[in-house]
Length: 100
Image 1 (cartoon, rainbow, N blue to C red):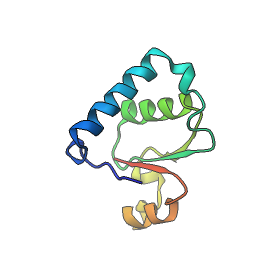
Image 2: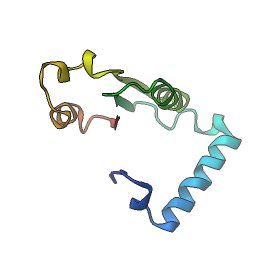
Image 3: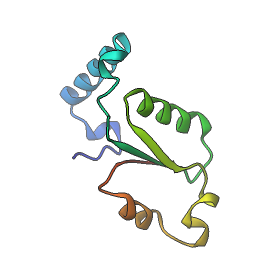
């Protein structure tokens, strides 16, 4: 598994492939409606970001996966001092994780 933290982590070829895939998904979404069956996406939002959170959740659901997570640090163990890395260690490797 490759961790993507920045677009600079991708080669030109990988970026081209990713954009081609995005274009194909846009053209034929039904073709991809089950590619994430059985997969889970954890969205860990430590800052408010409704549009980003909902767009990630919507995309995962459209691909057949499921979503769990929290939308603010107040509703997580961070409120009692747990670090982001401890939270991620508890979730990984069972799912894709997005942290903001």
